[in-house]
Length: 179
Image (cartoon, rainbow, N blue to C red; front, side, top):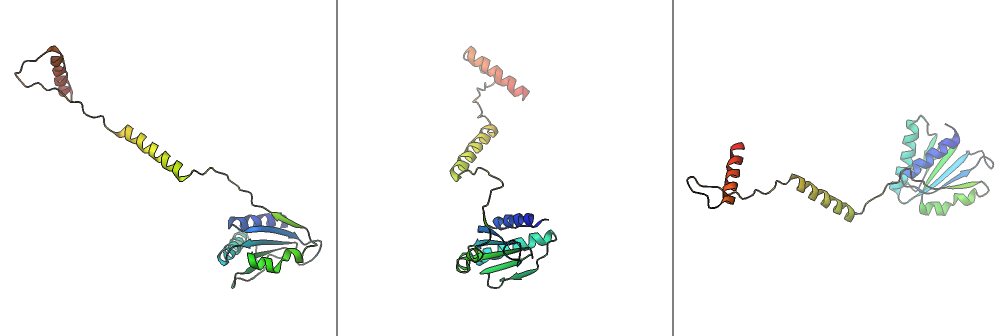
């Protein structure tokens, strides 16, 4: 993996954990400390840990070893050193205080923005509820048994009153025989 590919991978890993204000400082022309610094901000110590751990674990799984790590106790500013690339994960107030962008102001600085990999439409709760109601009523209509029709049953030995009743009576008797 090239250094530029590593930088891209690390920025993607930062965005996975909702890191913000991601900047890449290209140090090759101004210093031998590293080729790149990657800076990002987090809202809490929990998020600082999540970002740092995500980077460390993902790169370790790919066989990329961490050379040095600092700041995991206080979680105000965690530094992950991969020799060519050094990552700084700051809580917002610490980042403002140390202002590394100004310190390395003579180096090219690139601001990186998160680009969504998948875009999907999200329905509101009201739309989901309306959809569920429509599905439920459609299922009910399919599964409900038709209401039984009232049948005219002729008592044995009783003569039919008119021809219409006689036809119905015969039909009921036929239905009864067939089941």
